[in-house]
Image (cartoon, rainbow, N blue to C red; front, side):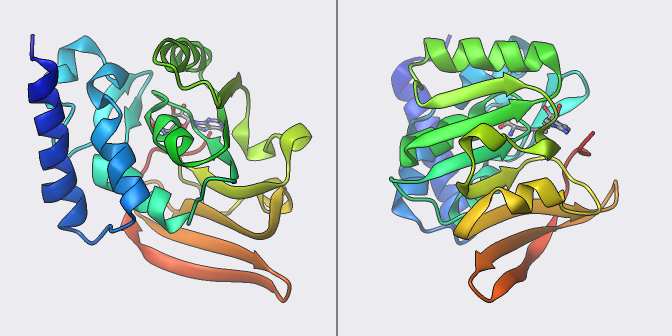
Length: 210
Ligand code: SAH
């Protein structure tokens, strides 16, 4: 078993070599990535790979995203301490944990029931009390808590669900991988008083939205 010091050191290296080196600079994002115990969000058999530069399987044909991609999505969403966030695709709960250290409240939806209940237990036991997990179809959003300052979708589709755009606040940002099964672009939609602004943040690979 690795000591806490060793794990902290692995996280510090992960932040420097994988995240800062690729241009993520938001200090709040870097701090969150340096403290959240990623090894506790992955199955025991891949725990030794938790701080490596890769996505990892979490069962049910789903993955926890590569650390850099989590950091990039969080920075791109321009989140701040008063924000209420919606995440679609809870998976392990790792992205939600990162967001919860920066934002006021995180609402997250997962369609695979055992992943949703495991993530809920994990987040609770680790003390991420401002994360609210529910099982369901995230493409419908979570109307009773809308509007959201940012929405992060961690699964890909060829179009952005309209209900998510509807649940963005004015000046709200939506980050989502958009494209086919095998290649997608990370898209940022910003809701402005003049309409929707769309930016392409570069190529990514995600599991499909179902
Ligand atoms: N953010 C996760 C990684 C998510 S992988 C983490 O940090 O670990 C994408 C997740 O989206 C998978 O768990 C998948 O089951 C879920 N998903 C796919 N379609 C969905 C939908 N329509 N609604 C909610 N979750 C969905």
